[in-house]
Length: 134
View (cartoon, rainbow, N blue to C red):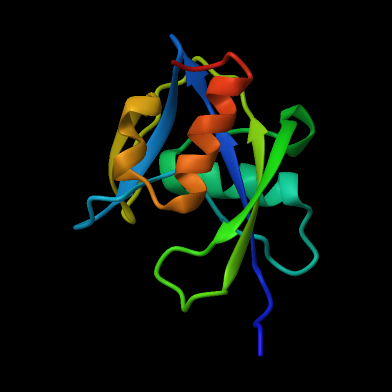
C-alpha cells in the first residue's frame, strides 16, 4: 500500500548565486523555507505563508514565480512515501529572521547538498541547472 504524497510548497530566495535555506532548532539538515499546503490554500499561498512563519519574509502569493516541482522520497518517512514540493522564486531585499521553529538561516550553494534531504538536494541541482546558483 502506498500512502498519499506529502504536498508542500517552498520559496527559493536567491542572492549572489546562493539560495536561502534553514535548519530547524536542534537539527543539522538544511531545508527550503516552506511546508505543507493547508486545505483551501493554493501552493503559492502556502509558500508565502510558510516563508513568513519561518523567516519573516513578507511575500504575496501573486508575486511568487513557480519554478518547478520536485517529487522524491520524503525525508524521515517510510520508503515509498513521497514528497511533492512546488518551488517558487521570491524576490526581497529584506533580511530573513529565523522564527521560533527555525534555528538558523543559511545562504547555500550546490556544495551544501550533502547537508540536505533528498528534496533539498534536487532543488539545489535544479537551481544550478537554471543558472541561479553555483
